[in-house]
Length: 387
Image (cartoon, rainbow, N blue to C red; front, side, top):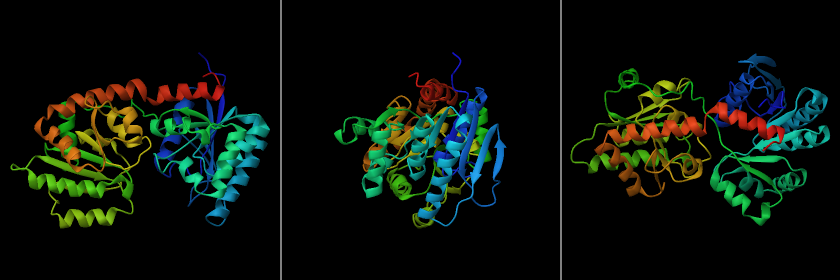
């Protein structure tokens, strides 16, 4: 069915080539909409030496110069967002705001005046989600009250957060919809057997069982604790298992991780690879993707790994509970239960075929439920108010 939506305005404080989970999803969704014949314009802040205007993969990007830092920077972006949306009201059919920060307030206000559908994507896992964080400040509570009155549609990417908000009288005025992130299942594809062996060799590994973490190195991901647990498991095994842990990413926990790896003498079984622009070679080399977070939304990296046919080993929190079929496409665990995590690891050590079976099921889930083409088609229906 042909969509009534011909043009969409995306609003994000930062956007590609600035990379983070939100920025990546916004860009991938924008490209998918362009492929469906929708005109997409992004307004964002101008950072560094980025051009004020450019078109990337058919997506038009307008970057606003802001001033100062912190509150002043946010306030200027709010004002520019508000006046741009009113001035260009004839050039878009709906607006999609990425994250419910201060710019979302300006977008909702302008959208009401312009008579446009406004959708806001919420970020964060339970406890660090945007609603919880907003409740902690006076201005945040005012923002939530405004959203209740103005009625933008809030997209929640986490089943646990959605159920909490839906069943809470405090947030009964919010217009909520549970949704999901998407993944380019045409780009992230499973390798053939010989391709996987070549991929392992290309990243400096033999035919070990490769456990992969991709993400920001921050405390809530609990990757340092996972490394300590990894050392315990190796010490407990009578025969040294042929396993390797590959950690891809950067962040404030980087130095602590490097110290832990050195102090625990894990250099031969753990690699701290740093950030990588191209993650596909690492997904293709991996057998099991790990996500030991204490709190999580819906991880882009996990979806990419699933699309590449990689088995999942993740905390039983956030979006992993929605995306992973326990025992079929992955192993879920309590992030604070060390024995439960070790049990998951030992299952893969004992049976190398397990990751293959789980990876096949993970790929099927990615294609059937999380393909970006499907997510974009459903998003167009949401913009149009048809579902």
